[in-house]
Length: 230
Image (cartoon, rainbow, N blue to C red):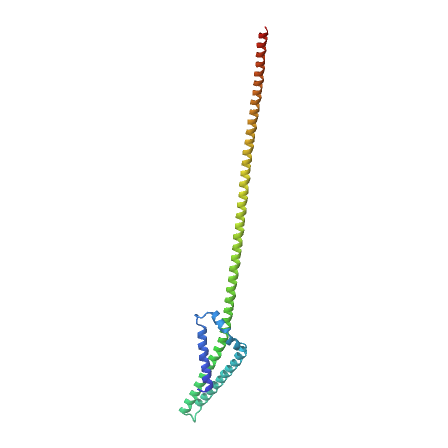
C-alpha cells in the first residue's frame, strides 16, 4: 500500500474510533459540548468549516481516483480475458491484483469520505442536543421558579383571606359581646330605675306615715293640755 492510501486508511480508522466514541452513551451530550467548546478546539473550530471543506475535497479526489483506477483495471482485465493471443496466467494475476488494490482503495476512500460527513453531522447534532437540553433545563427551572412563586402568592393570598376572615370573626364577636354588654347594662339600668322608683314610693309612704304620726301626736298633746286646763 502506498503512503497516501496508508494515510487514508489511518484516517478511516481514526474516524471510526471517534464515531464509536461519540456513540458511547456513558458520556452525556452536555459533556461533549463542553469538550467541543474548550479553548483548544475552539481555536481550531474558528477555521473548522475551511478544514472540513478542504479535507472533504481531498477525500473526494481520492475516491474519484479509486473509481478511475477500478474502472481502468477492470477494463484491462476484460481485454486480457477476451484476447486470443498473448494471454498468460501471470498477467492475469497482476491484473486481478491491481483490480483488488483499486477496489480496496475505493472502499477505503469511500468509507473515509462517508465517516467524515457522518462525524461532521454527528458533532453538530450533539452540540445542538446539548444546547437544547441546557435550554430545556433552564426553561424547567424557570417554570419551576414561576410555579413556586405562584404557589407562594396563592398561599399568601389564602393566608390573607384567612386573616381577614379571622379579623371579621373577631370583629363580629366583639360586636356580639358589645351588644350583649349593652343589653346587660340596659337591663341593669331598668332594674336600677325600678328599684329607685320602688325606693321613692317607699320613701313617700314613710313620709306620709311620719306626717300622720306627727299629726296624731299633736292631737294627743292638745287633748292632754285641754284636760289640764279643765
